Length: 547
Image 1 (cartoon, rainbow, N blue to C red):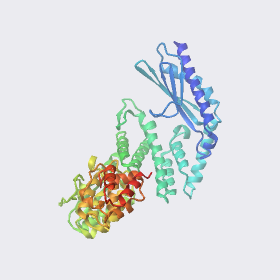
Image 2: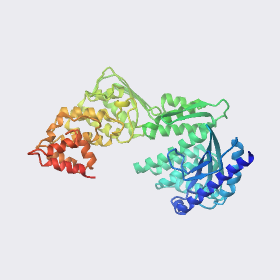
Image 3: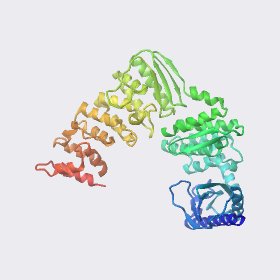
Image 4: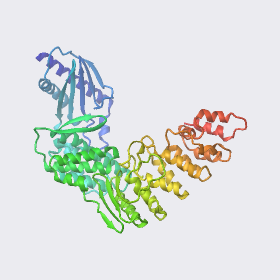
């Protein structure tokens, strides 16, 4: 039995040697690491799956990639223990990996781990790691120089790739010796400050930082205290271990910082993770976390003004508004409060909890009779507030993948939806706002624009002034029958204007819009063949064929 285990360990080690040799021949590692002085090597792990004499080795950690290497190896004929196999594999791997201590094909630390499928059972092997002393020392020196010169003394934007590596290294206790929480937060905040001039660039730097924080929390910190049950379609379930170490209060503070960063800056679908981290920090003993969940971080002041009071919880993304006097002034002050929150990084996905005697809703199907909807419908009763409502809407709808959190499923709505729909139905002056909104809609996850489009067409009909907005709306619609109100678009009077609006769209998008007018490409083709058919019909067919 000992001999079989040694043989399996040796064959796994040889497969890793073969894999690294292939990677070295196919990757120009020296050129790759030149992109950032904070990248010590290209590959930092390999994983294997042993299944009845067949060995597959991967450089990816997902379940969908093809194996980088497949080998036939010795079949197990008896029991094997994780302890013995791990010990023997480590002995076999160390000299193989040490040969690359000064080669950038491997990172400063390289891990090998995997699983053995034996009959109906499965053995998970813990990682076997090799660290290159020379690469580690060089990387530490680069980290300290970067922190001092590019961050603390920095005056200019930094590189996104540098932030990616720097954030992950800074949270690597094996590299840095320990995680200095105050320093980590100060450094991350300074990087964001240096890159605040460009919104898209800032978003990428922030994403790299949050990803590094989340990886640290999920893979390093929380497993020490919780048994974690993961599932592809829901949030992980955390169960406190009966035996667990006492958590470091500073690391609990970093967990809370991670949760807040996710809530404030990541897309709405990541928000439950941020809330969960905050709750776990409280469960592990951080009193501040419970207070933040209840009242928010304290970053945003409440207001108590004539006719209205309001307060904001940025941790849960909730704005509580109480309207004591139903007038334009009260709702105007409420809108100003919302605008101020969003201009100062309040979570873009949020909801309003409203106390008001008035219960007005927009005359549209499936919007959901939520407090958030009701606040904006009430405010839309005052035409004097229309400019302020537009200003709010443009700020609210600017971020991608954000939603009002009290509207789900078929009522799901991009922030700004209620203001845009109300203004669009109230006045032609807001047609440009409607068109800009439709460009922002995530058509895979939202369908309320269908109901607005139906109401818009019924309200205004087809005119020279409405065609551009109608096309924008139809472009954003999904799974909707042709609208009878759009029949005039098939006439010679309006076909030239329709053709003009569709000129710049790809063919498949032209066909998408046409389906809501004629019903299908085939029906349009049949209409084009009729005697005395308008000249524009063949031109529309040509547009649909365009790639």
